[in-house]
Length: 179
Image 1 (cartoon, one colour):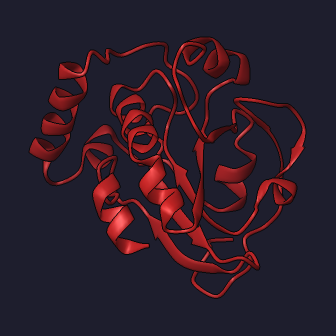
Image 2 (cartoon, rainbow, N blue to C red):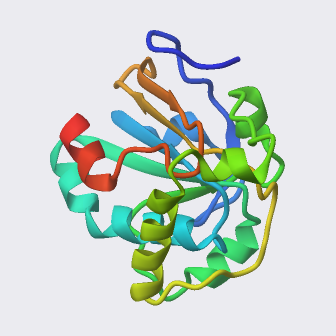
């Protein structure tokens, strides 16, 4: 089911970067953002995690918590981020439970994944490399598209965005303005 505003975000049992077999609704403590991306080895995804961690206090100050959803294996995420200071949990959805349930589909082609403005992806990739991020292991579906869901305290979706390409997401600063 594709989520739209006004629908209830479904509950899932997930593995996170911190713990296994978590009933997601036991972790939701109020207004919540679900930032859905590809995998931890993706250069621009790793950059997104870095930016979200860097700006997490601004997200918290607006009364929101954050989960990043990736198709990465739990042990891989834990190993890759063991020395990183990540103040939020990463949901490791390598069985595609969330992606499939919410119909967060992959692109049909590499061209669709890159989008109509490849310069935007090149610019983001260059910024990621400037920060020292390089491409790591491939996991999941390389053509996976991103999504963004924001829910209120009762689990009702107030914003649902399905990316049309890999960079069709708000920037972290735009997200903070949006909430």
